[in-house]
Amino acid sequence: MQADFWHEMWESGVVGFHQKEINQFLQDFWPKLELQGNEEILVPLCGKSLDMLWLKQQGHKVLGVELSQKALDEFLEENNLPEQPTNHPAFCGYDLPEMRLLCGDFFHLSAEDCQDVKAIYDRAAIVALPPKMRKDYAVHLQEILPAGTKILMVIMEYDQSQMAGPPFSVKETEIAALFADYQIEHLTEIEFQRKGCPVNEKVLLLSPKI
Image (tube, rainbow, N blue to C red; front, side):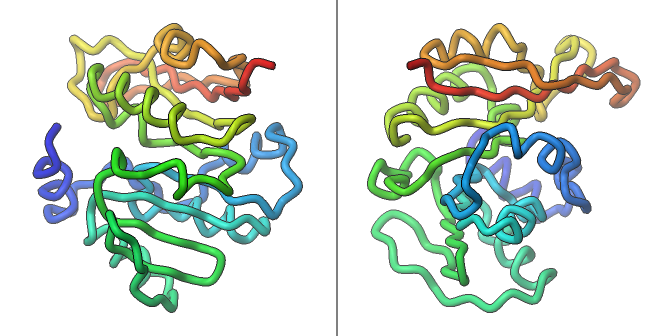
């Protein structure tokens, strides 16, 4: 799960995790975060997700972080978005109206970068990481997030012996352990088959405990 793995996936075009439509979970459950509608939203490991456009359409500012330059370039090209190069000491990337796309290592994201973030949308980030990196990801998030930041998270649970990740099987109990200072609300779940393996996809709302 080194950087070369993801670069090779994007170069090959084999990106099954990319959805060609706005995620229905996002549309259905975003109101549960009880935001005003003009907050900045962090989308980690954003790829070229159309969900970022939906968040922007709701009035939010979007901060997307992605390892692959190709993914960000395709996002701009496929959606005819104007951009200019961003100025950042640890990332390259692009600045757009009400959107900033940073290209580089997510673990270089700082508290200063996230000082205006009020919520996180994680549909394909934590499930993209193996166990050790999931722990590092959770620790880093909690180090850089402003107090009170909520997280809308989509995870998958399945028998990892039947199917290799990514996306990896991440149990709700693991999320509870990684985010012990958060209240976790189970919003919904659906079952489906992926490569012949039963998968349970869950939507969670993580709210910092008072």
